[in-house]
Image (cartoon, rainbow, N blue to C red; front, side, top):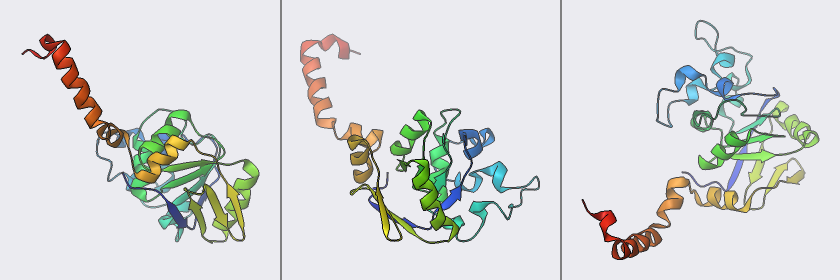
Length: 201
């Protein structure tokens, strides 16, 4: 997992509430267990018409928003099923930070496990920041300082210290487990001495 520290981008603004995971990545694309290749199908039903052509007025089909790394979304983002393909699709498209007033719990957790920073702000601040998307101006996110800078303004955001540490160090669940390899080996050796029959073939 890539480390997350600072990020600068023109944000894409998608002011739709209750965007569920099926809207983010529809069920027909869930056959793969790879984390790559899903970006082209992100928001598939909103991005493409029935002939598979890009819908010109959809935000992520427009330049420069088709290169945005920050997505500003409506409340309750990521609701619906718990599919981890949703953050995979966002990440493969290039989005590494989402800003919303609220998220579905499982989606929120899955973002951190895949290197995406989901920021929670109140609606007034989101409207302020969205103006920079409309004007096609960059904003920046500093995870270490927990601050978003836009124009001459900045706003602090809250984040769980452990989740922050994982993003800063690029630690997913596997990497966290590997950091405890020595303790695991010590436990296994101790168990072999105390209960050797467990390890008999």
